[in-house]
Length: 500
Ligand SMILES: [Zn+2]
Image (cartoon, rainbow, N blue to C red):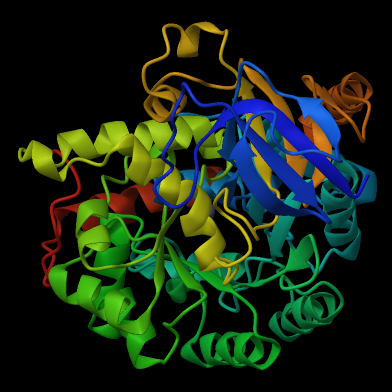
């Protein structure tokens, strides 16, 4: 069906997400794009899909999650990032085959699509070598489900243990050498692998695409960051990297570079359009200006920042400076969920504890716009995705309004952000294709896949238990490093991000 009309829904239109909930619409989709938006019942000569009683929203982009965490959902809580992260980068690795990787990506994306996302950005760690089966399985899952996906490979060229200060003070020389020598993906090979996939699956033309991900500046040498930047420039790829998620990372920047990581990236020429700094919870006014001046996106993950105790990002300052903000859920080992409905609700609610001045609190509209148009802009696709407007690609989500979240119905957008958590989701279109119809996935047998996922994880539990046990020596030393860094003052102050 190359042309069809979505009839009778109310809709969140344009950048303002304006919605007249007493005015149902006809939305004509032709060759995967929105061709017309008119009052309901007025568009003729096209097949009709009846959406009476539904709310149509632009699909959200989950701009940050890690599919490699999906099988560890529920296994941990109450650790800060610097201790927690070793459980998803275990010294004893868990190398998955193609089928296991497929199922791991599938469970992440299934939850995302059932909670309002039409696109995901998966920043996947490959384990102790460049695992091509893992990459192929993951890409195949996104192909099969029908979701839009941007795949990164969390590249780094430093040993994990070298990402932290003071380690040598808390381990023997032999143990330090052992930790530094743990097997890891070859940096040149992973860079070449990213480039090869990106040539075949470019974000400007592929629904399932490869992008450039440099895991974090403290995990990469300056030379490697330059190489990632050069590859992204050559292939015109979006770039993502984790920056200043925690207070300890600000301290780490002081100790490693004598400046903040944001400034470090600026000095390397790494910042710019289509470049997203993930988190940036801890930042100061000068850094906000630098990000604005370079056209860099801030990628906001409020639920993750809560769950790992990282703090509250200065989102109002970013928006005031004209910085594009996108949103994500982050990985399921830390956050338990890839739901973007949860993330937008958390973003708008969390901003209310950051400012005594209530005129500076984020609105439902600002949060949802960051999650939809903000994500599209971060990928350089703002002209094609992120809003319901004539000419845009049809990445759309429909919600029933006869569920409690929308009854009584006064403001569809606010009720979507603060109340709906997926119960009423009925239909999803990605690239103009209906991938969820009346609550059912159209391309895959969901209950069969869920059974395969459960069986795959059950078989892997002993392996995960062994892998997680191998973290113990690192955890002991990281607890000391963390305590020491927490006791240090920030030499370059930031906006307050945490209640002390
Ligand atoms: Zn992350």
